[in-house]
Image 1: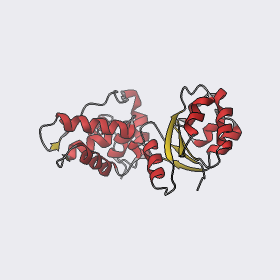
Image 2 (image 1 turned 135 degrees about the vertical axis):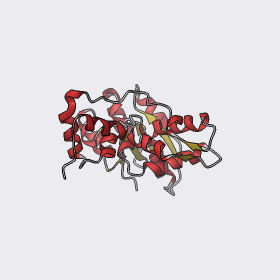
Image 3 (image 1 turned 180 degrees about the horizontal axis):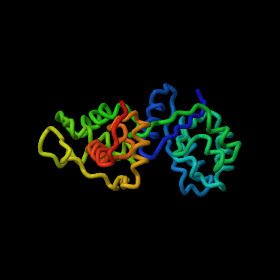
Image 4 (image 1 turned 90 degrees about the vertical axis):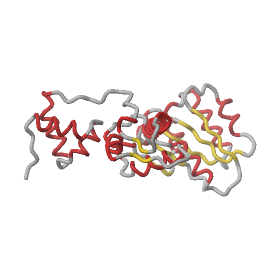
Length: 239
């Protein structure tokens, strides 16, 4: 089908990898061309990607497409109805109406897929193990403490950041089991809850049904840190 597809998700969630996987699952002939919309200055740049046997055009970061290029892109899409269009964005699909022409939005938004952030994925253990299998020819394991540390991080860079952390750990570690000390520290310091934030901490714990691990994951902190601060503030789970 030529139904346009929009993939949304934060930076590093794997939008282009998914687009390529969808392309490879399509039995039709034709190539795959990825176009970064940031800095695209003229319609000629887009037109050059739509020649020959191109089957799928992937528009990366469609929310960054300059206004002066949007009319030209629309013209190209109208002249090449056989193209399969897959676009990606870091914003919500509804937010595209604020930065793109209405007629272009209608051409790009057909089916939509939203990729979750790493911090909201329930399969982080599986994802980490899969990345480790790609990083090493031998089986690399994660200790329970290392797994807990990975689940506690904010992962602003999502899968891309997780891959970098695990690749560094595998490269620098001398054993086959990665512990918490083998993991590179987060590039940014997580938010700190000061004493004045006791009420906020209690509200968060209530929202998490007093699940310390879940609260730690949301804040990008270790579970032990949340537990220690809750005890210091005199917070106790209701019975």
